[in-house]
Structure formats: structure tokens, C-alpha cells
Image 1 (cartoon, rainbow, N blue to C red):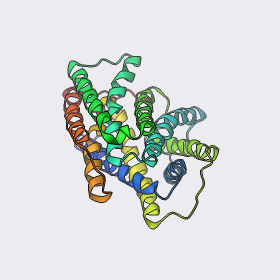
Image 2 (cartoon, rainbow, N blue to C red):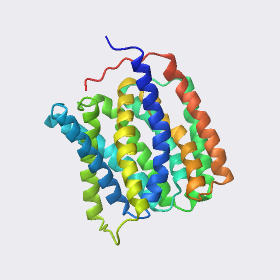
Image 3 (cartoon, one colour):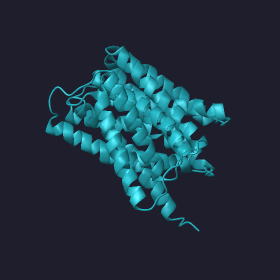
Length: 300
């Protein structure tokens, strides 16, 4: 019988990893793309993290994924990491501030609930109210000067959020490897896809990255990928997708504060109001998640 005390602690730790660590990765991406080509940096990040995790798991005796599991992991890795994280990285390279990028990604829970409808998931009144409030926040965000100055970056962020959300819901219906092996295979697959994209787009290093660039990459590999992404996949298996993606409403606060403190980023009045509205929306979306028990039906 599983330890009932340990399970809540794992859940709490996973949520903290998403809220705090992923909130800081927006700043690290911003620092990293100043030295690295965006797709190349994302590719190296996920290849390193995936290979390290895969090697460790195989050393611990975890079975190698089957061909069917590799195919499923490639699909989810493409959506979550190549499209999702890759889109955010490209947007920040296009001069979207790290805080505003995090605010735009707050559309993830909206797309998650809408994607869930394709599989017959029901959405409560409180969740719909949260969606409406979140959309108001996104509208306010787009009135700000940051996204208006970069329509390309804004489009990339919405695409990234939609791809991430759809992949998150779909992952519960695919034969992914069990536990952390899912993270490893998805990161390896996404890393290969991103590296191909980097080469096809003609990216190359014009000079060696700075110490800050190397430090940002290392942080993204260890904390942003191995720890936080594994925590996210763990939550997807143990809570409803809308709860697992609630980090998107907390990350903006962390990202905005860090961007203002360490990157001299400016948040305008519209963007500040958008942050308050979006963060408030997570309360409405999150309430139904904690009122009902979650039955884990994932076979992976």
C-alpha cells in the first residue's frame, strides 16, 4: 500500500518545482539567447537532459522503451518541447521580455480545458469562469507595448501555449514509458527535432557563448528540464490536466519579478493589470481540482 503521507508531499514538491523553477526559466532563456542561437540552445538543453536521465535510468535497471513508447514520446516531445518550449525560446529571441512571455503562456490552462473537450472531459462552471477571466487578462496583455511591438513573438507564444496544452491532454491517452523514462524519451526526441530545425534554419555560433550563457544553459538542463519537466509529467499522471497546467498563472509573477530585478525589464500598466487578472483566474480554475479525487487511469 502506498504511503499516504508521502504522496501529498510529492504533489506539493512537484507543484513548487513548477511554480518556482519554471517561473525562473523565462529569465534564464532570456539570458541564454543572448549568447546562443535559440533553436540550438533548446536542442542542446533537451538532448543533454534527456541523455543524462536516460542513461541514469537504464543504469538503475529501468527497461528500455518499446518502439510504440518511443513513437508516443516523440509525438508528445514534439508538441510540448519542440513546439511549446521552442516557441517561447524563439519569442524571447525576438525581444519579447521574459515576464510578458510568461504572461502570454498563461493561456495554457484555457487551451488545456478546450483540448480536453475532444476527449469528453467535462468543464465546471468555475473553470469556465476562470477561462473567461483569463481571456480578459490576455486581452489586456495584448494592449501592452511589449507584444504590440512584436506580433511575431505574440503569435509564437500563443502557438506554443496551444501546442503544449494539446500535448498535455493527449499524453494521458498514449502508451508513454512509465515514470521518469517518459521525460527522458520526450526530451531526447524533442532535442533531435530542434537540432534538425536549427540546422535547416541556418543557425550557427558566431562566437563562443559567455559565462552567463553557459550558466543559463546548465540551469535549464538541470532545473528547468530534469527536475521541473519530470515534476510536470508526474502531475499529469496524478491530477487533472487543468490543475497540472495551473503553473502558467503563477509563473508570470515569478518571471516578472525576476525580469525587473535582474534584466531591467519594464512592465507597463496594461501588463501589470493583466498579471493581476490572470493570476486571479487560476483561483477559479483551481478550485474544482482540489474538491474532487483524481483517479489515475494512465497505463504508463
